[in-house]
Amino acid sequence: MYSAFTADVKSAFLQIELDLRDRDFTRFFWTDNLNNNPYVLNFTRVLFGLRPSPYLLAATLKHHFRKYKEQYPHSFDLLNRSIYVDDFICGRNDVPDALRTTLECLQIFSDTSMLLRKWRTNSKQLDLLWQQEGVETEFSETSATDLRLPIKVLGLAWDSEKDLIYFDPKDLLKFMSRKTESERFILSVVGRIFDPIGILAHSLSN
Image (cartoon, rainbow, N blue to C red; front, top):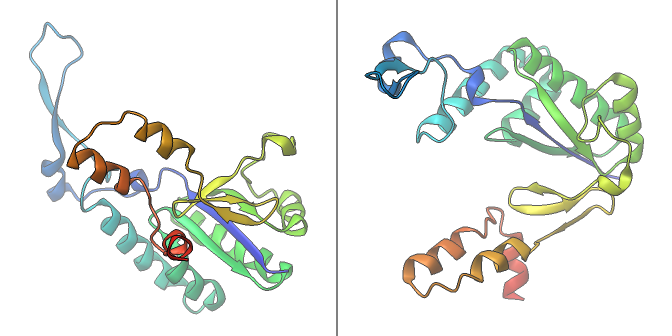
């Protein structure tokens, strides 16, 4: 069976330090007491939510990956096409190959002081091997399978137990229940359907 697996980078943006010359662009006012005048501070790390942040993260990761092109050619190619901002989404045709990929990717990220965590897979065998290797899975803190709720994979829900990808409209319907009749609201509804690889769009067209 094809072993699909996902993980995410813990606090990815905050692991990237800003150059001293660039920190002036992240200045903000701060005060410890509302009765006192605020003073100016600046961030020293890349912020989540800024327009250039995804690019800075991607460029930093690709620069780091190049160091391992010869040492881990197998995982080097995979990482370059399987990282989506701070999410790692890929798979392998057999479990030993998937485990090797996991351990190599963990080492590569560890060397740059980043942690790949919340691993999840559709393979029970791979999940067992992860536990033996001490890999931090999505459910490392609990063994209750009934708590293994679907996770989001590029905007769609993935039930790793049943290995199903589907769209859950509950949150969207709840948002639409506001029934605000405006063009802006309609655009907001459309924007909440995140389907970058076109799986949902294809099913709707049929």
